[in-house]
Image (cartoon, rainbow, N blue to C red; front, side):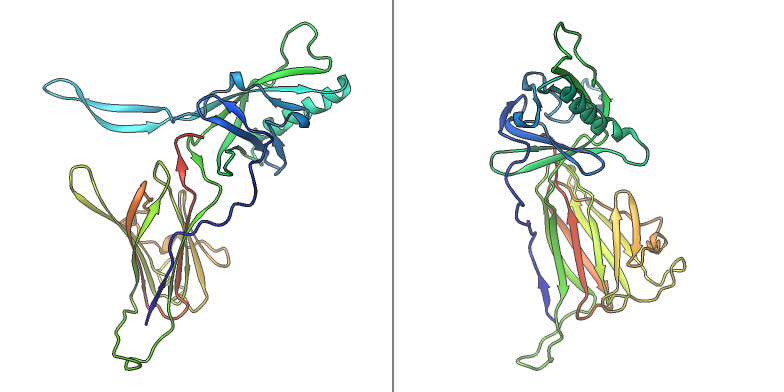
Length: 332
């Protein structure tokens, strides 16, 4: 039974740089910027025609992630790094707002203030800040309003123009690529054992593969498993700096006591999310109890190449695995 494989797929970019004309921004160079509020409304930030634009000279917080280091003192002097903890990021973004008169300025000022402050509402959550390069590549980060949407106390300001110095909190300090990376593996159609020549294939191992993470840090993927399958195991093998080889794996049993569904039939699907851990059957029911706790390790993909095994016991024609992730980056 042949195995149909496909490489990492990058869908086509839906369009050119958003947010207006590229401008020089500290720490990253020429780029455009836009903000999407929790309602889905897009606010260009580098387009002077919109009635507001970025004061690039005061922009900061777009560079590399800040880390808090934990070290162990060494007997012969110095220290050895034990752990590097990424810290939340704060973006400083000066914004100049103008109008043809005070009424128009006030309307724009109020609308922009609401677009950012609504990220603090419990029923809405973060907005999305996006930086786009002239070549069409984009990086995004989720932001919460922290401070700064106050007018400047300067003579003459506040009539038909004013500026705010926004402070935006990023709980996750890494920038993500909005275009997902997709890895697809599918069981082929059964062939006659003797036609055109003797052949043997396994109904257990769907595929050993190498998955490449083009980002700068570990990313936590989402898995979509399509039956038939009676037992699903995903394994990653990695080598530590010490030379030690570490194997991490998790197994999903559709017939586990907490689920008792039985083997996945042709076309039935389960989605496994690794961060935060979540397992959902196609009808939305919770299948987290189908994992092999406490041994289950919902591993992430390190930067670079990752040796991965997709194993579906009881697989057959139609059995498939889709691995989806968004690369994460240090800088915008």
